[in-house]
Length: 529
Image (cartoon, rainbow, N blue to C red; front, side, top):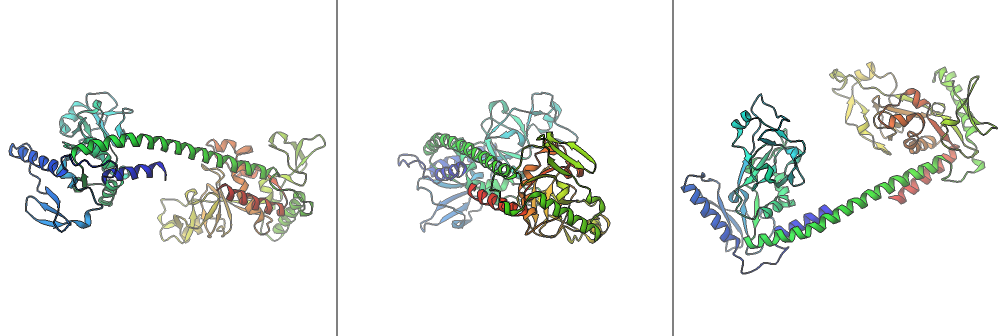
């Protein structure tokens, strides 16, 4: 159980009457509710408030069922299906609207804007409502002119706020004194004229039971919104007033330790995440340095593999399946002076400064373009609807990529016309390796479907492969390799291009050793989980 789950459980115990013992000497909640109704009747007679046509009393009948009587009409109905749990006999159920007043805020009049210039009138927005309070950072204000038009829509220090729009629905909190009588956004309501313990009500509103009622009653068409009449209809379990105070004290004491536990748990999770990330990186680092599995002479060498790749390229060129320019390659070797050189045609360059570490004698350094072909994707014009309507072909964006996993679905598809007019390269087949090289650098996935993709992703096809050995090896190591060499700037926010991709340095073992490395990585990653 994590901190949030524990907190929810404690709040649930509290609103079910299980957190503190009941005292038979406490005045029952039914008497408290009767006093609240009498006070409302007095205010109605004095014409200070209007009679609520939905005002009701909830009681338990002799048959042990729960009933609700609408005071204005005398109508009585059984509400057993609405009652979620049993409460102590000294408690009562009530609708929230029968206890308190719920009033909305107000948007700015048309043509007016908030200002950063300090005035006497703060305009409280949902973004100001954080961690159960209202924060004073980045406040916005309204002018006297605007205030005069919306002055009836303020919130007070004795009220509670409750957000009612969008993804923040149900956030509730206290109002600090500095925000007393300040204007309230239309995206929140104030819970005001509270005749019960305000802090008990706040804890109740934050409980999972209350939050679930808010979620169930939220209008989902367009922007989600929680209507005031639905808030008023929320069921509230009411303890005796004296018990409310005891519950609040117990919650404040208990939740202090729960919050401490939750903080420690978050720290532990962060530590676990850091350890997992660092261990994963260490495993991959050992892998690309040839230290994860032993070298076996009978498995051949990377030099032999590169010769095989060269021969395969020449064959593909003769067959017209590969451009002649693909034959241009380099050979990286270690000289007698212990420095690294790259032979490109007649030129031989010292690249020692580029080499990050030494490799086993049967491995080689090589450029990415020497061992694989790369195809950069495209994005059809968004303004051309015929490219997207009735899409037939899967089209991968970075958000579709499962880092270190399979891509089995895409959010978007492209049409036959898009394929004909936009994509010069053929579709990437199921089983192809994809890597992102813009924005999110070095994210790798394997296609479980045939798909095209956008220009931030490349399809990688090893020239020579056996049982996906090189594909899987690159799949595992490229996220780490992308942090080496020319891609360092890309990690800091810049973008790799076809040249820098081609020039990526790859530590290359034989195909059989690549298979053993992949198997060992997967074995160790499983242990880490």
